[in-house]
Image (cartoon, rainbow, N blue to C red; front, side, top):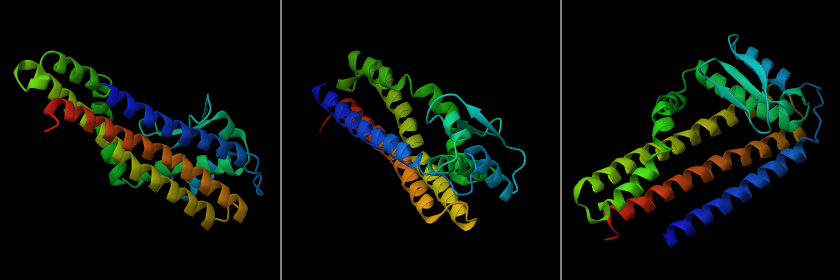
Length: 230
């Protein structure tokens, strides 16, 4: 188990470093006012309109960096700061979340795949590791009996969660690319504002990359425990 704790600790440190950098970048570019004076909510509404999307509502949600698109009720949920503020960071986040709405409207395949996995992952992710540990305790490490099958079932569940993490990557990167292309092509931001928006979204995407790598490392570690190091 020492190796596992070292692995988890290393991933946690990298995740913290990326997350901390992301917050600093957003704080920095939150001080870069938009020349057009538009709020995040107004940016979001305009991007939706420019893409011919009229059935998606832009709403404010509590918290910081809690922004997300909900495909079930078709809402772009912007954190209070992003919803009201008028700066490069708010423009980047608002446009990014609308990028997901555009993906949904255009039936983007990676988003459809991720949405399909949501019900499975929501059930399996919380119990997969406990199943693996329980199976190993029951004698799964020897490859015999019910315990081994319990551990394998846990690995399969963890595999779905890992797959979900990697499918999320193209979804997030594509949403950012759509957002940045729209901001630039519609002259919504100046060159300096665009640079801030681009850097903010770049660090946001890296949080998903670290999460995916962490999920894969975790899966491989437990696979070694179940199937043996040989």
